[in-house]
Image 1 (cartoon, one colour):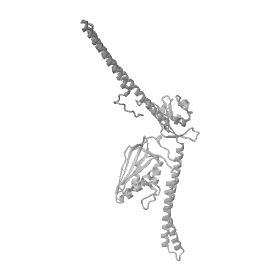
Image 2 (tube, one colour):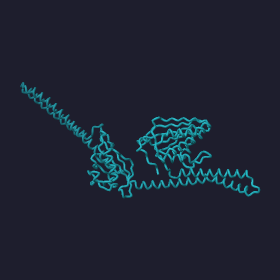
Image 3 (cartoon, helix red, strand yellow):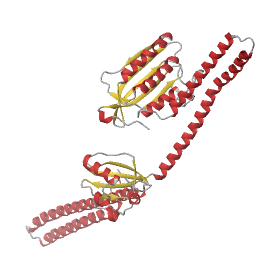
Image 4 (spheres, helix red, strand yellow):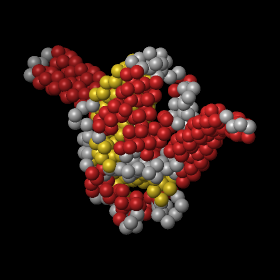
Length: 458
């Protein structure tokens, strides 16, 4: 995992510092063999000089051969021992470098790291974890987590659940200590050995107090920006009907004060005033539907039934425009937790937009599938049309309030749909190709049992 950059030794993997002892051993063996050879030759010369036939010469020759073999065996063993020792030293140095690198990394990273074994004892803790938890390594190492933390400490509770039940958390923000203003982001994960057997738990700790403050400031800035956009949009949308009201009321006043009163223009002006008032009311209702918190009536909902109901509502307009509607849902699709009326509003907005995007006809395809997200079962519904598509410049703005490419649109339909999907713990994304069509994909958590129904967003 932590592999240092090892320098390639001279002559491949044969270290230079081994050359001298190896040469020394070889030189000793060669010198010994040469010395024995000279002694043997001296013995033979003496025998020839004295002209004595001594059978010891044969024995000395055999003894010389045996001694030479033993010397070479000794030399081989000596070199093997040196190589083994060198390999041991090299491996030891590499291990020390790896341990040193890992130690330096753990000491340097800005995240607290703490490990506990299966007996819930602390086996390692780095300086950042010491600062976050307010303990020292000397006082923490070897202690059980029940001795290190209080009984109702949230970090201790998460550690115990990880060790005992294998339930891990990811990026959980908790107050630590509970009565303090600091926030700690906690992540637990299994610690395994080389055979992938779980030997403990790794706990990551990060003080995110300042980060959460910045996030809150960012959310506040985004809300102010959204409020500015909404205010400008509402003012723009209401300005036109107010101008029409002002003009027609002025004309109506002229007709009413005239003698005699002409009923026909009065009636026409009153109808225009009534129409513009209804238009303002619709703008305000849509604005409130988007801006105020949504009150959800949760229940288990079958999305295929909701989609089929909305399809029947838009089928007449689709036939008038030459649009064919194809719906495909698997029979084993689970339910979702949600408000059936508001989910129907989402699909109604998407289908109306799709039909209106195909003025020359086309196909509206609605497909439901099973999926997964963050380890949880989901239901995905795609709404695809073959219409005019959305430009790249406008694609990132489709969910913004009061943004519309239609002359008569108020730009709140998709913004409301996005808000409803978000309130249902879902997600919505869009892809489009100009001139080829648009696809909206909605994802909702599946309800596998009644206990898995999520609470609505506030």
